[in-house]
Amino acid sequence: MIDLTHTSKVKGAWLYVSDELSELVEELEEAETKLKSLLIPFFRSVFSKFHQNRNVFVQAINCLAELDCLFSLSILAEDTSHGPMCKPVVHPYKKG
Image 1 (cartoon, rainbow, N blue to C red):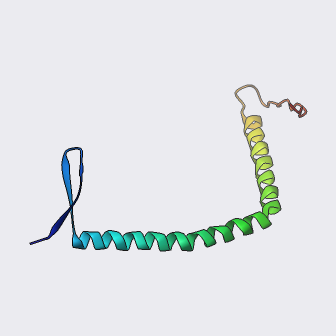
Image 2 (image 1 turned 30 degrees about the horizontal axis):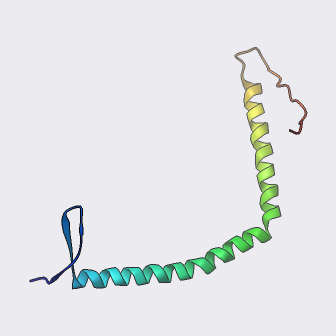
Image 3 (image 1 turned 90 degrees about the vertical axis):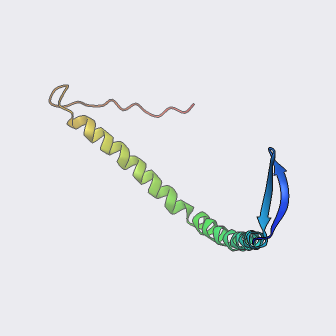
């Protein structure tokens, strides 16, 4: 027979737990606490390294953005539905 302990009443239902379940919940909570204590320094290290090399990432993102733009323009220029070739109009950048 399993010994059950009354824990609470929720929406008209009585909630019970066994000693084994209580121990498992406690172990899980301890494991989650340990995981958090290990993850925080790890993430700090990762973000610190990322921050130290942010210029490299910014340059890479800018290169990818330019390649994306050029690739899109090449697809547009290849479209022969409007004739043999189309030429996009590129306007100068204006702030605000």
